[in-house]
Length: 156
Image (cartoon, rainbow, N blue to C red; front, side, top):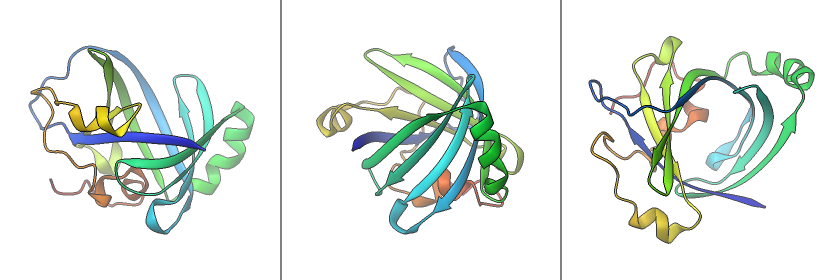
């Protein structure tokens, strides 16, 4: 089993995000289960994948496998009512990196920053940079699977 150890923050309006590599992301959910279970397909930066996650909070189970463009195209229609469209920027943060997502469409105006860690101790010791806003790691309404079916961005 893979493990994802991740903290998530809002990026407030007006904050300037440092430069980084950017690309479009299309992400759709095939399964949205209880207690954080999900199965999703994603197309980003020329690569497609199928990911299954289980659990909530800081540490979650995660399994990911590559998909061909044809496999992605076959599965994409099944996600019709559970999708997010965003621009992703990878920002170096010393030994870590922030994944900054700017959402589009019905979620326009929402920006989040996620940082993944190799262990919970490193996650706990992380000091967010000044351009990060409030932490939302434990707020279910800010999970991508919930955003995929939301009518509008959640309130901070």
